[in-house]
Length: 184
Figure 1 (tube, rainbow, N blue to C red):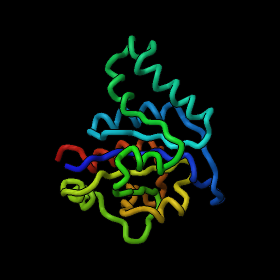
Figure 2: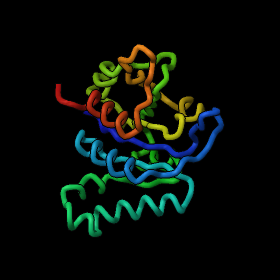
Figure 3: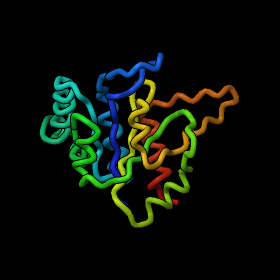
Figure 4: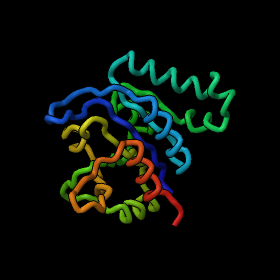
């Protein structure tokens, strides 16, 4: 099985009007996605943020669970948080994985030529370079990130007749990790 890592991008992402913005890091995203990634065997969970103060916040959260009081009180969470990597750019995450990867993107909206979760699962089982599965914050990834993608995954489909489809990124990540790596 191919190496699979995830990245949570805070820039460049979109606001609700479609402008490129930088979003703030959320403690719950770091903690919950790291735990889900570890559960499903991802090797790394990258948090991409260009602002130093935000990266410092993420480092403090990581330290709390890897060597601070959180690690002493609930040691089961330490292994998951050890996989958290805080980087400035998406290129830094790619470099950390060795430079030659497949970049897979996700979205709540349908995009042309999207790959089904079943097909993506089969692709992960085949030989190939590491895969970096990229999630956006805010209202989604900027087009420049989508333009770099080798694969775009189909959206997680809502069963609602009114079309409502607005999962938290934490929930979407857990669902996709299960669909790509869960027991069948």
